[in-house]
Image (tube, rainbow, N blue to C red; front, side, top):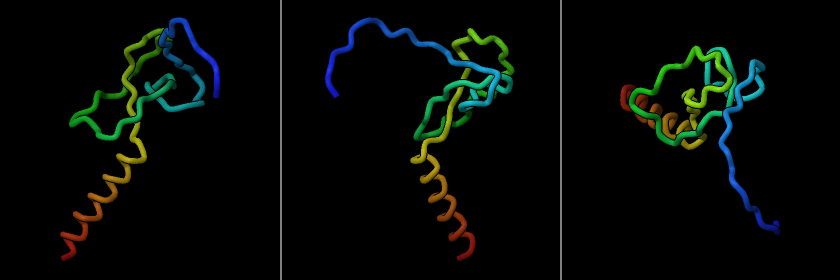
Amino acid sequence: MQGEVTGTATPKIHLSENADYGGASKELYGHVKLVDTMPETPEPSSDNTDKNNTTVPGLAASPYLVFNYVKASKIKVNAIDA
């Protein structure tokens, strides 16, 4: 890949009423942030209906997070069965 990019990137919330991509709200759908570790208590889902709201929390488990949780669950189950 070649070339140069200049300018200013403006973050934009991409909320939609169509379930085209991961949800960040109970009523609207938008981009989510992948996380490798889940916060102790994540923020609850939003009832946001304002498509211009840029503070809608949206977290999604990364494949790494899922792998670690499955692995930890197997270790706990095996300890109980032993």
